[in-house]
Length: 240
Image 1: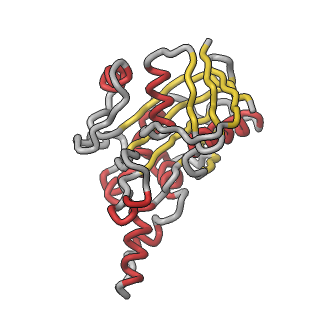
Image 2: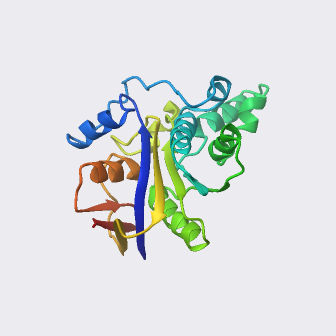
């Protein structure tokens, strides 16, 4: 499969990283993130909404609103490998302990909670999609964006995010795998600024960065070509 896009805007947030200057300095150095660093306060997201959202969703909505404040957007694609894992863990724990469920946790536990709250906060009924595809979630969301372009939506905002992983699940993840909240937003148009072709791979990537952060690192460091590898496919990216 081949993909081709123009990246017209971007926004990202992770522990210790928020502004464009910080991200460019990060891209010029080693691709590591200190999970213990402070996360910047939201400046676009209403306080009451921020309090209702889990850590990853909060950053995702903030990134989306930042781009929406300065750019025209025709459709939204939100992508998250784990979705509302923090919130669902609380629900499962309450059920196991035979306690009452939090109405907020119940209402906000669905995978499209972040994109839904974005449309509410932006006061705009965007056409939207919510994607989850394991370790390959970000790259599969790129395919979803291409489908939106084919359907006639010119400027599609892709936001890839995840929240903190509850301690209960930590033994089931690979050592060094990201367990911090982050969000990466890319405003994509059809074009040839950056292109990708997928090829099968025999082994999973050993990168500890989520795919979207690995992509952002390569993009900001102006690499002419790079690969984003997942469980079954490697996406070979080149820029013009």
